[in-house]
Length: 242
Image (tube, rainbow, N blue to C red; front, side, top):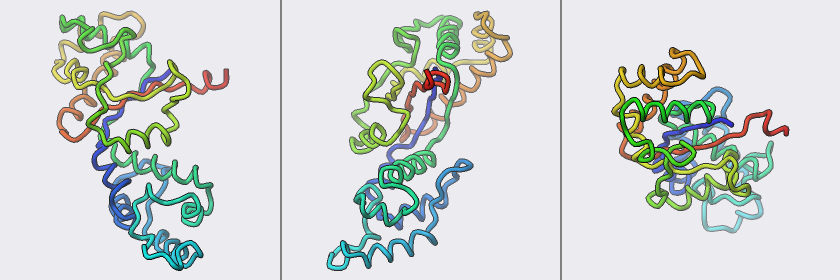
């Protein structure tokens, strides 16, 4: 099982996904850095497809202009015309995930067990009560999602393939409590060194490097008041085949 921690500007994502007209959204997303291989937001491709949609039977007598709709408001039939190479569900999922990726401020990837042991070791090295930062499984405490716009929370659950709400107790996503990050934000080099030396599962240099990665993500969270940390537990390919 792998652990993914994402620090995401969900407020900007909600604005682009739920409020702004699709042309505005594409123009903004087109300028944001994308991961290699992710879906492109290209206005030069969008505009002819919007024009074709505008001439379709569903829109010929409509008062609205499809170019003024936000991405999340498009129907399945509309998405099929905008993204003819993919089914509507796949298109919506690809669009959302591609937009989500552009609002990730920082991220951490690691194996669940190893990461949890390092977090507990860091709490011990800093002489802190691990229970103030970690849950019973040594994972980050879950925080309240109430301040996150409900429609974005729902979109993540319905469109993000990493969130498996139909399988309780298996890979899932949740908002990380603000208190968890304090375990990392205030950690100093000596703390990382001491924590790395408290575990026997891996070379101290590797453990120290992994802890440094966690600290960098925590400090990215700390610098940005509008972001939220999300925790995902992801099955490995081997586990998925079992």
